[in-house]
Length: 64
Image (cartoon, rainbow, N blue to C red):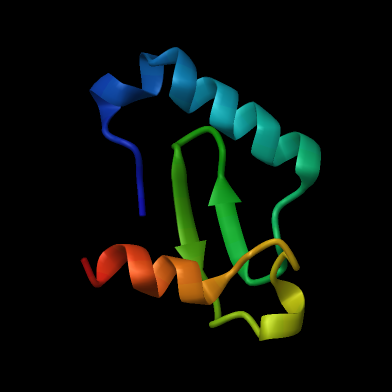
């Protein structure tokens, strides 16, 4: 995935990248910060995801 050239200047995009660098990127993602690109290397195991993630709420939201 990548961020469009025009969106790279947006403060929210830069803030999200800064926060992600601070928190750290997961092993199952590679990130090219200079080119604003990322690649999923593998599907993460459930244990590798944040315990705050509630899949049921995501499914419920998108099923409406």
